[in-house]
Amino acid sequence: MSTATLDDYRRAGHRAVEWLASRIGADGSLGGDCADLACYYKLPYLMQLAGRPADANHLLDRIRDRFLRPGGDLLTSDAEKTLDPVLTLYPGYMNGWIAMAAHRLGRFDLSFPAWGYLRTFWNPELQAFTIAPAQGGAEVLMTAHLGLNALYLGERDLAEDAGRALGRFLTLQPSPEARFFLRMAGSGALQTDFPAKAAGPHVIAADQPGQAWFFIGYPMAFLARLYRATGESTHLSTARGYLDFARRCGPHLVGEHFGHKVAWGAAELAGATGDPEPRALSAKIARNLIAAQERDGGWMAGQPIHTRLDQSAEVAIWLLEIAALG
Image (cartoon, rainbow, N blue to C red; front, side):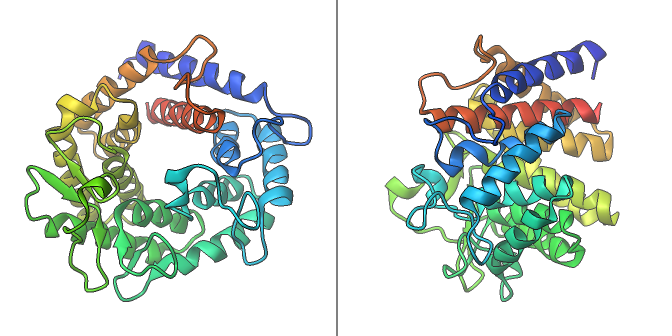
C-alpha cells in the first residue's frame, strides 16, 4: 500500500480523534448528553492507539467509577445495560472493548474484573462463546471478539478453541455461496430457522444490501492475529474462508458504512500472509469510509450522539490499525 494512502488513513483517523478528544473532560466524562456506556466503550482503545494515553486513562477511570459493577459487568445503570437496542442484545460486546483497552494500558484494575465476567460467556460444550451467559449456543461475532480478548488476557488455549469454532461455523454453512448463518444451537447445529424480521443478527445474505457485514470482518481479523500468535496455518485457511464470503458480498458491502470491520479483517489477513487480494478489498472499503467522513471529523451525522461517538471511534480505530500494518 502506498505511503500516500497510509497517510490518508492516518489523517482521517486523527481528525476523528481530535473531535472525540475535544469532548473528554478532566474527569473522563463526555458531557451531559453522554451518560450511556455506549458513548464511552470504544474511546479508550482509540485514544491509546492514537498516542493519547492520558485521555485513555481518564476515560477508563470514569468507566470504572461510573459503570463497573460487582462481578465485573459494566452497566449504564443497575437496571439497564444501555439505551442502544442492538448493543443490548450483545451484553458482552462493549465489555470486551473495554477489557482490551484496559489491558493494553496496564489497567489491570479494570481488565481483570471485566475479563472475569466475560469468561462466563464461554460455552464449554461447543468450545465457543455465546451471546449471553445463560443463553447457550454460540455466535460468530462474540466468538471472534471474546477470542481476541482471550489472546490479550493470555488465554491462548481458549483463543485457539474459539478459532476452531469459527472454522466449524464456516464448514457447516449449507449454501456458502449465498448465505452465512451466524448462530449455533446448543446441539452444535446452525440456527437456520428464525422469524424473517429477526434475520439481521442471524444471517448475512450475500446478494442483498444493508447487511451487518461486520459479522464477517471480525473473524478474519481475529483469525489472522491468532495465526500470528500460534503459527497454526489452519487459522489462516479459516480466515480465507470468511474472506471468500466477503468477496461474494463485495458489490454491496464495499460502499456501506458497516463494511468497516471487513476493511480491518482483510488488512489483517493481508498483513499475516502478504496476499495483495485482501489488501485491495480493504482499500476499496477504506476509501469509501474516508469519503463519508464529516467536516467535524466524525461519521453518521443525524444519528443519536452515542451512535455517532461509537461509530466515529470505530472507523478511526480501523483506519489507524490498517495504517499501522503498512
